[in-house]
Amino acid sequence: EQNIFGTRPAEDIVRVVADFIFTHMKDRTNIEIEGKLGRLVDKKTGQRINLPVVSETALADDRGTRFESDMTLQQHAMFNKLLNQRVDETRRPEFRGSRIVYKHTREVDHFYRMDGTRIRVTKDKESGEIISVITKTKVADLNIYSPRTKLDIRITINEEQTLEMPDTEAHKPILVRHKDRLSYKQDIWSFDLTQVISPE
Image 1: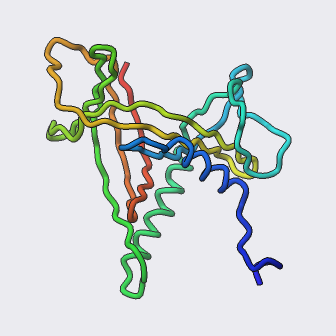
Image 2: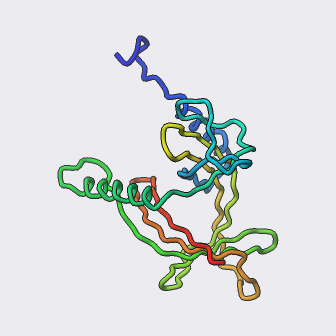
């Protein structure tokens, strides 16, 4: 038996994340749920926070911290190798389940401020083809401190709206961002390793 009541015990951190998502998805459409790996850093010291806990912990008050969505080149290479191995495993004839689809893309994001709205135009870096035009509104963040690993987690819920291509001739982009992305997709999930460069 799993326990005396015959039910599977629920992990507390899983319930916290599920409640967070359920609460903030109510009455919303076109939702993106994004989990990022990085470090929770103390704003005063600039160092990773050190809480007196021994397991994953969701922060109720994170005003004194900031999340740095970054990892070392070694960590990036480790995840890349691990995910490539998993792609190979799902391609084997004996594998039973959903296969993982790998894709390498190079894109450029141009951000514009128009009538008070921040618009993102994404283009293929090589061809210049427009991939998407959206505006994204952040709904909520949940920060999770993970003392037993080198990386923490931020779960973000965004609401996205697809737009028509605006007239950008008279507008200079407020930000240009180059993205080199390795994507591993399985069913509705996508695990992305993204290197971002924002020219000065």
